[in-house]
Length: 312
Image (cartoon, rainbow, N blue to C red; front, side, top):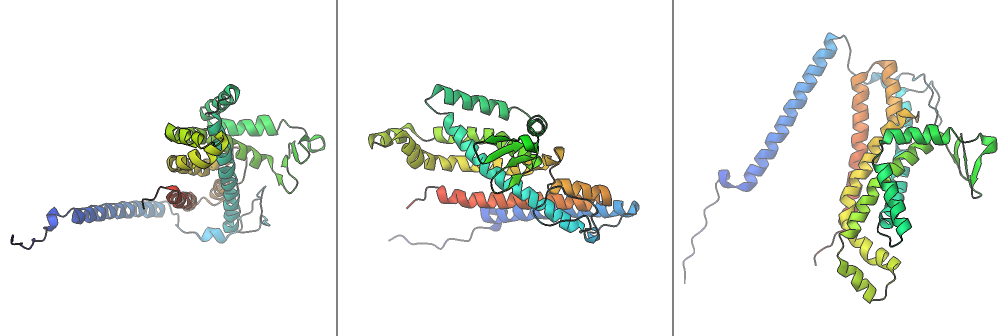
């Protein structure tokens, strides 16, 4: 019987886990040093200019009106409440945009693979036009060319018997969407939806042809095959790049300032112009978009885990 000798412990300088931890600590230290240098330069420059850093201005009276609010707001309210109103408006457009973009993108992506020549090419034209046109130009088109060219309220155009279009925006049975909100929502939806359509098309094509053949051999109709067999498998490929498009939509909503929709960036810009607190306002904007992006990423990562194949 062979004699077993005890293994000697691996030296630290040869332990891969040790160097992994050390490298992470070095990166953290470098980031901390960079932040400290930046903060030191910032405070020194502000002192030389006679500017005091702080967020006390948030308690001051805002003194400006916000054209579109869900909560009661008046110019005598504080800057902090005005920014809160802007954040709510940003969340409105981001949530509505993500929902509509998902619907438009999935529909167009599936249509790109349709056996119908007209449907397939109409989807192709939509994707190529909206994907290759600047978003800012599209927003200005929806606002200036479409909504401002609509008739007045008394001559509003009806779509069916429950949706009406006029210069006042889109009127639904339960609420009215302003022209600024409507233009921003449609612009973000159709622009981002064109990218989502290509992601969906690529995800569906990544599923092997054998899955289609197996479903057909079971007698499933093409619509059921797509819904029950192909699309659930394609989600594993679709979700990661789809998350990036949701993040882009949230950040691109800051272009609302071009058409006068009072989102967080619009309100923050007005706050900066009145108070001159550039650093504080920019930090607030950065923190806001960072938080929204992290929440979106976390939600999509959790959803991504639920659709992955789990080994038994």
